[in-house]
Image (cartoon, rainbow, N blue to C red):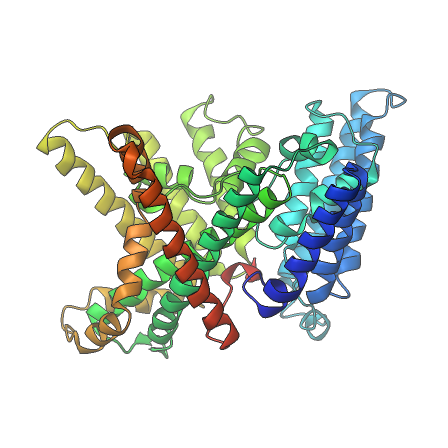
Length: 483
C-alpha cells in the first residue's frame, strides 16, 4: 500500500487514526495503543504482501528470541555469544541475499526457472537492517534485550517507516514505545510534515519521472537518441525525482510517526547544496549512511587506522552500499564511484565548511565552484544508478557531452510544459523555509501570523492538487520499492 494512494488516504489512515485516538481518549492505555498500532502495521504490510507478511513476522520472532539468548546471563564465555551473534547475522543476511540477489546469482544455473519466480518483499532491506541493528546493539552491550515481544514487533513493523525508512535504531524509539504523550502541537506538526511529503512525491517527483523516463527510453541499442540539452535535462530530472521521491516518503513517515507520538530520525538535509561529496553523504539518506558507519565502518577500524586500511574500510562500505541497492552491476559501480571520490577527498583533505558563513566574494566563488563540482559528480553517478546496464550508462553519459547534438527543441518543450514544477523543485532543494522562518522570527515577528497563514494555505492547495492527481490515476512510480 502506498502512502499516496486512495486506499491509504481514504481508508487505512482515517481508520487507524480514529481507532488510536479513541483508545487514547477512552483508556489512555499505552499497551492498548501499541497493540492497535502493531495490528495496523501488520494489516498495512499484508495489504500488499499477503504471503510475505509471514516472512516479516518470522524476522521479528527470530531476532527477538536471539537477542534474549545472546543477552542471557546463563551464557558463559564471549565465544558462545559471538557464535550466536554470527548465526543471527547469517540468517538475516542470507534471507536478504536470497530475495534480493538469487535471481542474479543463479541466473545461469539449473535453478534459474525457480528463482525467476521470486518476488522481492517490500521493505525487506529496511526491516532487516533494523532487526540486525537491534541484535548488534544487544550483543555489544548498548542495549538490554527487550523481553516484551510486542515492543520488538512494533519497532520492526511500524508502518510509517516500514517500506522506505528511515532506518530507526531501537534506542531511538524504545522510550516512546513504552510511554508517550501525544500533543496537539506534535500532531499538527506531523500533519504538516505528511502533507509536505505528499506534495514532494506527487507534484514534483512524479512530474520529474515523466521527463526522466521519456529520455531514458531513448537509450536504444547502446546509443542515446537524444540531443545534449535533452540528455542533461533527463539526468537533472532524475536527480530531482529520486530526491523528492525518497525525501517525500521520509517526510510522510516522520509526519505519520509524529501523529502517533513518535519522533523518527531525519533522513535528508538539503543534500544538493553540499560543497563536497563527503558533505553530500552527510545530508543524503542519513540513516542508511549512519547504519553503515556504525555497524560496518567503525567495527572495521574507522578512520583511526593506516591510510591503506582506511582505503580498504571505505571500499567495503561503498561496495556494500552499492550491493544494498540491488544486484545490478550498475549499483555496484555507482557505489565504487563514490568510494573513489570520497577516498580522493579524504586524501586531498577537502573541508566541509558552514553553509551560510560569508567571507567576501572569493569565499562565495569558491563555494559556488565546490557546489558545481559536487552536483556534477552526483548527477553523473545518478546516471549510472538509473541505467539498466553499464553499456546504457556509458551511452547516456556520452550523449551528455556530444557537442554535435545541440538541438534544444525537445528540452525546451519539456521545460515549458513543466516550468512551474522545476522552479518549485529548485526552491525546495535549498533551506529557504528555514531561512525565512529564522528571518521573520528575528526581524519581523509581527508578520509571523500572516506568513504562517499563507504557508498553510499553500500547503492545503498543494495537498488538494496532489489528491486530485492521485484520484485521477496520474503517473505514480515509487523508486524505493525496488530496494
